Length: 301
Image 1 (cartoon, helix red, strand yellow):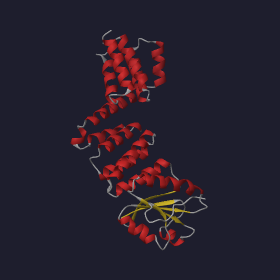
Image 2 (image 1 turned 60 degrees about the vertical axis):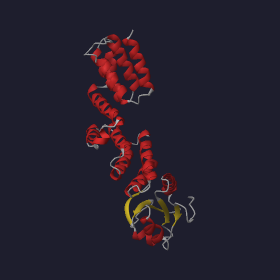
Image 3 (image 1 turned 90 degrees about the horizontal axis):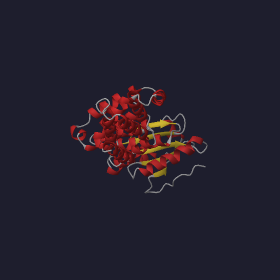
Image 4 (image 1 turned 90 degrees about the vertical axis):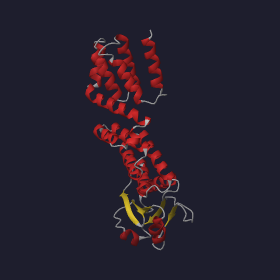
């Protein structure tokens, strides 16, 4: 059996009935968003979705509440809301349903849904927007880029000066290979934000992603370099392809090897490419620190 929260006065999560739906959902949503979970004891997917929703709501730091409606015991409400299957979830803001979904979804999609609801309410609690940003950043780290994009976008609809959301949104589009959209968002940022130091690495990340698209198949390039170690052009493209596949440290090693073999090749392209990679990373990243140390050793050798 799915464990339910008790209907206590201060709880963010409670059971409601037909008698309390108007007060606990419609009226309550005028103060803060209310998520409504339509479920039944016999519903298998409900047993997974319910706890995911509860966790996401509790993580929103009071910016949203949640109610659970047992459709077996409250068929009139389910009929009025045109619930065709369960689980079905609605979000109410200012007395009206504004968002929803049917069926079981992933935990990251549940988080994205809750954060969109918080953002749709205008981010009335600052902690709500902060929590939304943190949630979206976690989605990005977990490679759930589409969910991250939805959440970052929702935050920016409410706070057009949220720098972290701009950066996260652009990086998510880069990760999905949508470089045109990433560049469009970067160019459309408010001027005062675009000049922030935190934005500078984004330019390098987009440039590197573009280069990777033109580098060629990574396995073919690896074979060319292995066959002819003096093929500087192939080694340079190999480094670009390595970076594009996420093998940043390997890309740095190939460029250092190229610099060691011929530092002046193509007007010092290896050194210039290393600086672009370093710029795209955090200054204290181990790859940057080690790469700069090795490059300095080669320069002053």
